[in-house]
Image 1 (tube, each protein chain N blue to C red):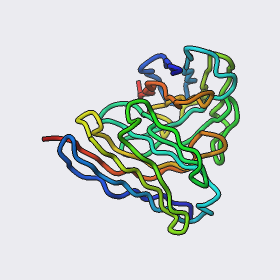
Image 2 (image 1 turned 120 degrees about the vertical axis):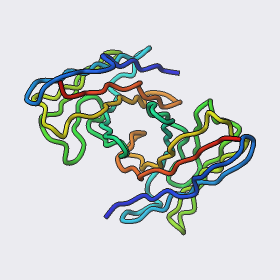
Image 3 (image 1 turned 180 degrees about the vertical axis):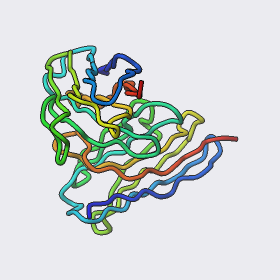
Image 4 (image 1 turned 60 degrees about the vertical axis):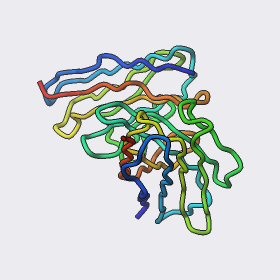
Length: 107
Length: 118
């Protein structure tokens, strides 16, 4: 099973600041990695797939990069609605796995 | 609009069974693979099971293999999760999600809560 480790666990930032979230895989997943956003009481929302492709209707301030074992989700300038928990997910091999999440909170 | 609605959750004793349903609308159900994903209280996401568009391929997380069964009825646009031999650690919100090619999830239901407790 591929283990995804996300860091940091919590990121405290102010609106307008840049957020950089990390996801590291225990073995190469090529570019087969997605990012999701989840707000309290709601289901996750797909943001990025195949490491760097934005999903439908996702704002351009969200971008993804990386390949192999190291991936980054960048939010260029945090909007109030961006404070949430973010998860990475790999589809390189079964079972599909998620990272433990990074909470982006208001500083 | 594209929608997934889960049902069937509840409180059940350890060792008992429960069947979840997920009703789809707004898209061609028979053309899409589907997933179940769960989230224990205060915890992260855990992928549970996958079924291909025609039901011919199925995959399960090791934690549920042999206890859970996934199925679908394309004539009813409904996905199912049969959960047997339930354990306390199966307590979670269960989401159904549409597969976004391939093996990502682009549409999610609001979830149904399963509580396993004596």
